[in-house]
Length: 263
Length: 260
Image 1 (cartoon, each protein chain N blue to C red):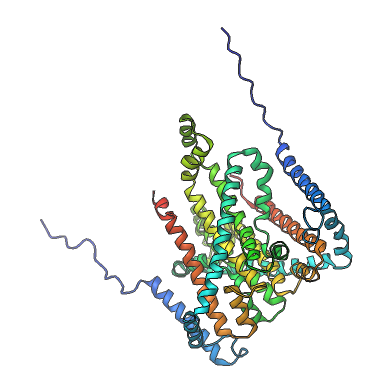
Image 2: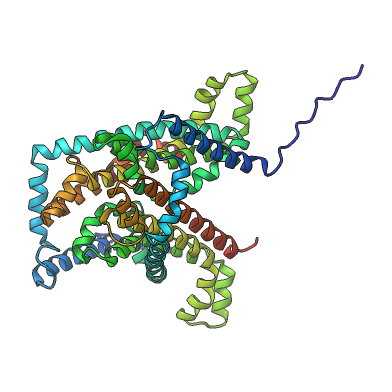
């Protein structure tokens, strides 16, 4: 049989994929433009500080003990907000998802109130809960409640009817239906709702801290702005964004979002 | 033996549920009014709803709420135009250069969920404490959904439409303006709607935080003066404006959506 030669020629794979290369180039360009702007003197001094100064501020920030105290305060406030807002959101979502009449009566209120800017309620929260952490937790709770409730209510309506019939055929009580059928079947929307709620709780709590507080990450950001310590402000914002994205990914991972998607 | 048929459950009247919702709200307000009048809740913390309603007239005459409303609307519209123009342009560009889309789409998606509003002190430093800091906050927060939905809309254009364009020998620009853009318009508007919602939230929020501008500043002003009824009324007005705004955007979106 005649040798037909290779049917396909193997092209050597590039050392770096073009997409990765472009990403690196874009990042480098961005950093170079930033550094160029910082050294150009075109902008007011320190509005765009040099990368070295931001790096130094970042190191200084992370090596100070009081930063971790403030981080702990903010994390505690967000945690409480997520706990209260998330739990009440899940309960209300379950009630609205289980009853079509109640959903028609009250869900539009949640749907339209959900996207309103919650920070405007902060003066009310101060009057109700005072100047301490309680008012920040309250604003975080308010911000977190709506996305969780709406996500759970929508998720409840998407539960496979067969699962509900199986539960009823076993004569499961209300509590058993909730714990054995509804909640396991709604893992995905609940986790998604909690992730969304976490984001909103974080924004609500931190904005409240920037407005009126003497501790927490929000206070550190606005304090750096007030003293015009721009490298410290940038460092605070960078750490905050990294922590927010990391925490969001963790909620998804520990909630088993990946495994749900694969099935 | 005859078996009595189970009585059929009557479906509730279509307006029963919405009316129940409205009635609950009215009952709630009356209950709050009564509780405050009795003294179970201090009226120095929560003013009676009747007082809040009465303060609307004062907000119109003395606090110029209508002028402030149009100020905020102007900021939203400016941010909205910028979001639409830049978002669609960047989306079309990213769709045209596939490598750029592959490299940057996940970044844009990450930016869509980033808490930009927390960077408002940064915007005050860059733009100063003025209307542009507020507009840029709205712009930055509303841009990612428009870019993402523009890419999604253009990528989802039916193959047959693209082929029709090719058979007419349309140039790249003509293909975009005559085929891709009109076909993607409903999806793009979903992005514009989301972008406008994010912009409105951030604009009112920033106005409140930096005490500058329209409705957000009014709430801050009234709270600083401890004008409780006025503060609650202004918050109610902002909620009303937001709800009407979202409903109007939804109507336009439904109008643009093609009938299958």
